[in-house]
Amino acid sequence: MVLLGAALVLTSCGGFKDAGFAPACPLGVGRGMWDVGFVEGRDPGPGSIEGRKLLENPNFGATAEAAGDLEAGIVDQRLIGALGVLTREHRICVDAFKEGHYFLPGVPDGPRIPKGYGKAGGLPNTHYYGRAADIWWVDGKPVEGNATDPAVLEVGKTLAGLQPERRPDQIIGPPGWTGTLGYGREEGWISAPDQLELHKDHIHIGYIEEKDPNAR
Ligand SMILES: [Zn+2]
Image (cartoon, rainbow, N blue to C red):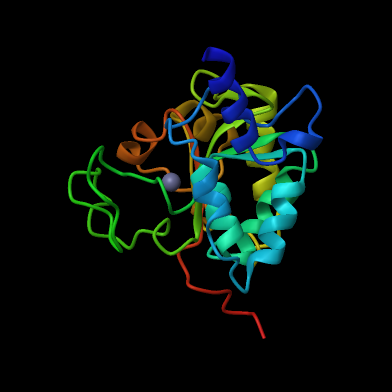
């Protein structure tokens, strides 16, 4: 049964079949909901082609829920693009876009961040709209405890280097990561101390604006 469980996890991890011995998501990590049928049972959405391409990228990995969001086409195109750039140099594992994201354990997410989640309570929830991703692992290493690891820092530098209209405007990570990188609001970073404390274990990238104001 142990072996069967491991196989299910591997199958659920997007891109694994092409990733050889280095899947983007570590073995056995996730929220424990690895029902493959859940992903397969969804109808592909109109905007799902780019999402499926990302899933085929061997440097990209996702939990079953996050993969389902990509297949359903609910993930913002700018976000898919940014993740595509990040996976050029690093293996990136996304824990959640919309499905399976919780601000507070046991409290279903809604359009707004719940009260009790730092000072951000009441603000629009970008995860709910498919405009945010939580990255928990980079190159197979957890973000937690590796905030100043060169690969994890490079993810921040790559994000900062994106064109402003393509760059997430809601970048939040661990205190050490944020402090070492030294970026500010102009580059999209949020550095409110309460938010950094809530992001010790992952990097959140999101888009506050519904769509690029410069888009035609
Ligand atoms: Zn997040």
